[in-house]
Amino acid sequence: MNDTTQDSGADVRASLRQIGETARTCAAVIGAAETPVKNGALHAIARQLDQSRDHLMRENAADLKAARERGTAGAMLDRLELNAARIDAMIAGVREIADLPDPVGEIGGVQARPSGIRVGRMRTPLGVVGIIYEARPNVTADAAALCLKSGNASILRGGSEAIRSNRAIAACIERGLEEAGLPAACVQVVKTPGRESVSAMLALDDCIDVIIPRGGKGLIERVAAESKIPVIKHLDGICHVYVDDGADIGMALDIAENAKAQRFGVCNAMETLLVADSVAAEFLPRFAERMKERKVELRGCDKTRRVLPDIAAASDGDWREEYLAPVLSVKTVAGMDEAIGHIGAYGSKHTDAIVTRDHARAMRFLREVDSSSVIINASTRFSDGHEYGLGAEIGISTDVLHVRGPVGLEGLTTQKFVVFGGGQVRE
Image 1: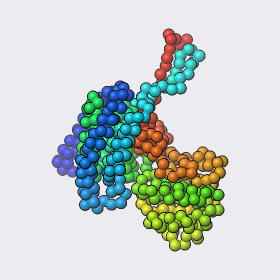
Image 2 (image 1 turned 90 degrees about the vertical axis):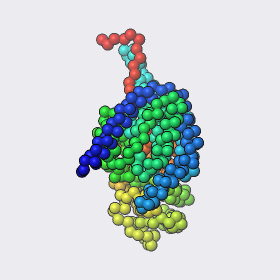
Image 3 (image 1 turned 135 degrees about the vertical axis):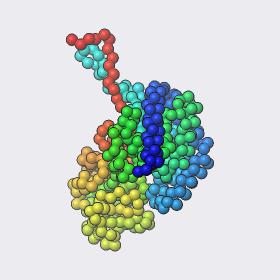
Image 4 (image 1 turned 90 degrees about the horizontal axis):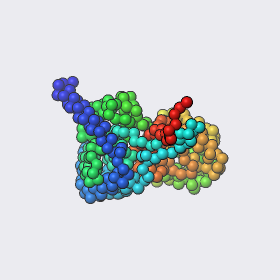
């Protein structure tokens, strides 16, 4: 490593140190801000985004052009694109977060104790939230809005492929914060998106309280390995739909098609379809026709290929694969026991669904499948902060501490005990 590279690395670390210290100062300000002030800032940010549509589209077009020139294609390009509908959704998401109840300061579970004191828990911000993400520029707005409403300062490190888009969105956020009378540095977007900035950010354990990575498996593994800061993460989205014995075939076809083909490059898309023996002969040929129309490649187990002899054979690696592409693994199973066992062995604890008419079997699936979202008779694509009524999500956690599933406002807070007394002293 030459001196210039060392100096560059030192400059990046110094810059991130300054960002972290500024965020720590701003956390006290935003953490104490009243709900109307935070909501006013969110509405101001939404207005700024709305007024900057043309600029956002131009900057995103430049990012897309540069990505294509680098040979980027498929799911990554899809994630990077900001079209009119996605800008609409980004603005709507910010406004929806403003309309949601503010969790900060909420007191619950108050109980009187024999001593006469009353003990409860109050929701408080986490403090400073660091988000490291790739490709999707809408994450900049979603993450900033969620952190702002939950009373957290945020440091957002997007990928180099979306640098122009992220800077354009960040400028709207800064103007909105200033319009509401809050420090613009309550939300800071890292301007140097190289690998060194990730390492520098992960070392700021005295400034940042939690890190949330959003991106490919390589990024998340690296963050989890290097971080000195607690991490909220998920590595893979190996999601399953199980078509149960006696399932409504029409419903199962619609759900499975949507789960796989509504959008390929997302973490809640179905990657493995499990079909009970008893319905395979009726279900599989009709499903294969739908996938042919959608240009989805099927890879099946031996049982599946007896019904669909023209599809490729699935390997053991296919059951572990998050394709993020028009490819689907299909396994025919003896029934519920084998389906749950397969999900336990190969799933990633993200989202798994069952299509069934039997309530008792559905409830068993809910109890025994250990995933952050378990769904009855609906598509895995609903595993999403917006669809769950969270306004948006800052990520999806497949961990068990301290939050699981889509991380919204409540997931960006913690709780402290609060005690109400009237002069009591302990004997």
